[in-house]
Length: 294
Image (cartoon, rainbow, N blue to C red):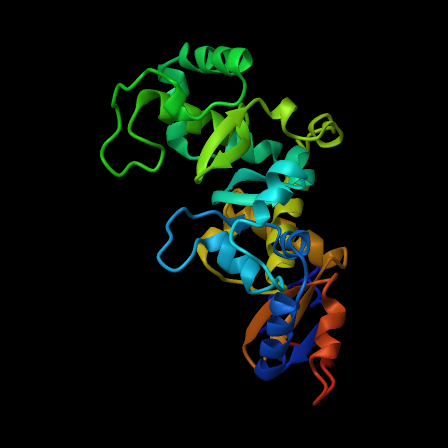
């Protein structure tokens, strides 16, 4: 049963493709050669993981899609050209710098719970960190003398009081990554890193509009996304009801199109890569279903 109904209760029109056609479309969509900014535009977010068993995650992602890519080539786009920046998006990620105003509610509402606790318990540390950065320029956590350990071993945010505060400020948007040295963040105020046309842009504070935007980002990044996926994909959606409403609104506005893959799985296709389905279904033309349930 196709689940996407309009507000009036009628079944929305649905396209039917085979599993093989879906596989061909996804392989083409995700691995079509492009440049670094093209990858970011297509995926919208690339997780930065410092672990390096066979290569760090962003290098592996870019290497698979960018001809001639070399390790750390993405850093020029991030720290010289300022086309992408480090942000919290489920985890530490690289995202388009143009997203800064749209991610205001992520910085306010959808950050890890412990970041609020860190800054609320120590109200003076943020001011002291900002004062040091204002006086000396971009700094890493190592430049601060405070070495008091407050976190258990293995904490993602760091063991020391200062490092935990800096990471909380980074997630909250009080600081951003200015550059890296040997993988280590050097932090500065966002107004000195984010280009002014994005930093000064009006933030997206309408909650319903924000939910539509973040849901659209997730669907665009995957291309063809099932109704039920990994929970991390739904990060920063709000409640399940918020996400469902946003998807319904995007279907009704034509941004997302319901796709029946095989005979059972329903997925949503973003309008932008829609033409890719036709290019990847040369063996058969996709069938458009009528309003009847299948």
